[in-house]
Length: 148
Image (cartoon, rainbow, N blue to C red; front, side):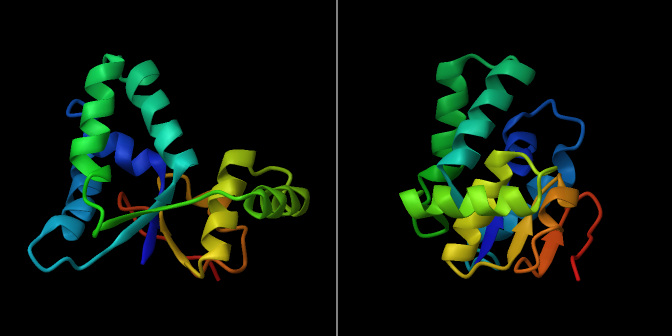
């Protein structure tokens, strides 16, 4: 299981995004007949992706929601959506206290990963996630990098 961050999904779902290619190649690994990857995400990732599609890519909200649902979320056996609990939010506050330069939504993503024993994330923002010691692999499909 690998966590998938919003920057990847946004690039995949926006057909005009200049960095779409390597992100699309990664996500395809989840949708082949025998998937090589199964992805996890949470509500923060979905919300951030919708905001990016509508605000940055200027895709109409209805079309953006269809892209996100049909292009990713509908595949329940290949894309797991993890819940965010009160303890997740508390854990995210603790993570942000330890890493004040990391934005709170990224801390919620990291807390969700920690709760579910997920140690690999695909992201276009590796510098934030490399700060969390429990995350063993931080991979940017545009050029890989790992935390120590």
